[in-house]
Amino acid sequence: MAATEAVGVQVPMWRGGFGRLWTAAVLSKFGDSLRTAALPLLAASLTDDPLLITLVSACGYLPWLLFGLLGGAVADRVDQRRAMWAVDVVRGVLMAAFAVAVALGHASIGLLIALAFLLTTFQTLFDNAATALLPSLVPEGALGSANARLMTGQQIAGGFVAAPLVPVLLAGGIALPYGVDAATYVVGAFLIASLRIPAPERAPRPAGATLRGDIAEGVRVLWRDRPLRALCWATTLSNIGMGALIATLVLHVKWWLDAGNGGYAAALTAFSAGSVAGGFVAGRLAAKLGRLRSVLVAGVVQLACLLAMGLVRALWAALVCLALFGVMSIVWNVSQRTLMQERSPREMLGRISAAYRTLAVAGAPLGALLGGVVATAWGLNAPALLAAGVFVAAVAVLLPVRRVDGPRGDI
Image (cartoon, rainbow, N blue to C red):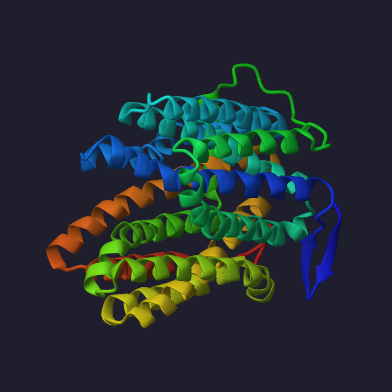
């Protein structure tokens, strides 16, 4: 768990466990991005029913609402390292079988929906276990830098490497992206299984302890921690705004800005580039301001970006705003995840993470629905203004706890 100091920010060493976890996470994101980009194309080739096509995406959210809390409770009961590599093995087998089905011409919308649902169901355990495992691999002071490096690597792999490769892989065969995704799961499982860390020490469970009781305990601890509760509500609200923006961004850029497909591609690139840049500034901003204040600053800047996007009818303004929005998105995500890891009891981190994520994830589909409604009723720039209004509420939730930070106490 070695770390180094740089410009007042403690950073994890690449050698050892963190380097392997980082590589596994980036490979997994690369494969997932290949699948995410290729599945809609496959779905559109199988049906022209918009509802069926959107169901494939919806199944990426539903398991979090159904099983997210359960995944966190299980993550706190088991050896997280073993749970993660076992889940990756299962996901690799599922993806390999799906690739074979596609290659043989047996793909169907029902199979796509089932695959999306199963993969995300397993992801509820994997992600909560990964959040709980990271503090075992790096010192507490390096958690912020570790989270930033994980998110930056994943953003580069998913936004800049995987997406351009999809057409190339599809030229080699319709099943090739899914086969590569399966391989990334297998390699990731090997890397995680190779981690040499002791199994977590846990106190004996009381007689009669149940998963339901464990889940309730995690929710109670999250609710009683005032900063984490405020951050959870703020993140949920921000996800509502993000859902509204992302669901209608293609309409905003192509039709309201009249920028066409090229403009939309530029908008996505601007956001991805900003997200990568955010990984390099998140740790330093948190070191200077504190984690909650960093989230508050990120929310204010994002609010300003959304207002500008909704009021300024120019592509250049939208690109600048999306790049800056991407920077602040990573600042927000790094700070909120690190603060949760710092303030949560280690033996309950999976459950607290699950309760946090389940509520936050629910905001995205709600926001997407609201974005479609307001775009239809008040115009294609209305979702950006709606998102700005939601971010006002998110910032207001954080203001009362802005002086509380870190593992304990006031700063």
